[in-house]
Image: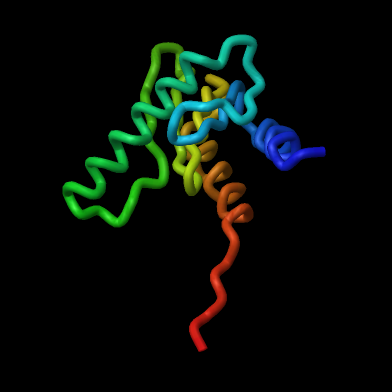
Length: 118
């Protein structure tokens, strides 16, 4: 099983994840659970790149999640992961804050810890 397959299995286990797409910064889709993931991949890429540009221009330390509120509470959340973006469409019965926290906790388990300087 590939890393992308393991990622897909784990992300859909998070309560509130309805649909997702993981794509590179150039928009290339790595994995998803949607019939047609192109729109979400485009939104995740464009919003992610622009959020990072704004962050650098203003001097923020970074963005952890960008939320686009939608009617019916099918909100779209975009998370940066190194050279990737994760776009999630939330289940409308789930609280957005809880979903974002749970996804961020999951993503932190993927980040390799850098060794402490000697």
